[in-house]
View (cartoon, rainbow, N blue to C red):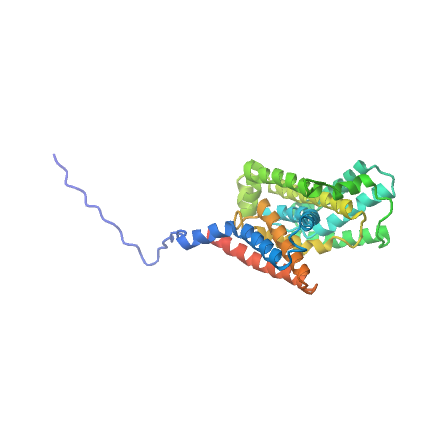
Length: 343
């Protein structure tokens, strides 16, 4: 017995029902803009080098100038990488400059006034900075204080303690030669501090790109609540980034003393703006929309070459901070745009 075919009807969509819109596909112009952004910083860096080499060939385009530039920027690169780590998990560390300055005073006092060996003095400075980073992370992750407020308060507190402990005087005498040799030596015209930075950058790049820990950090930065619900220890990862930030600042402080042969209690806060400018500028290139190691280093070099070139062609000194501020603003806007396009 044959059954009659069942008529299939499609119910119309009512006016009250909600239709979930399909997200727009990435258009060709968007893909092109992201692809172009990947190589923007290397191109800008080469363009700056070419421009200032033409404008000031006797002073800019010299081996001595490039060696000095790389050695001088090693400290800023470390501070910028330190600032970058909390940014990856969506936090700010505004104490990176003060932390680096504290480390420079610690290693100088330990080796010149307290009788510590060079190795012990270096260890003391780095451990103190790492502990300070841990405290920042604890205040943010466990106590629940805004990272902006917590690290700004710690920065102010540190600056006061450093000036109090030194009576505001520069530590110059009795800095051991074993320490200064680190900052003033080169291998094949490449300063040892910059070589150390390259090693650290390679390790950081590997951890952030190739290990589960790195992927977890970026996941927390994408959505801390979703990461928490998926079982990630958001608090532990946050504290780890702040502690690692302090560790890098500690190394930066040691390298600063090794290069200058002295420690100034007022040094440190002036590194904050260039460090964050490098982080946001670096996030526009290599991996657009994402804070990354290579982009941050390239950004520091772009800022350094631009600043050095402006000085050599006789631009007034006040243009330099204006240059850094404009770069930071543009970089933040471009990073925001790229993240919106990627999402």
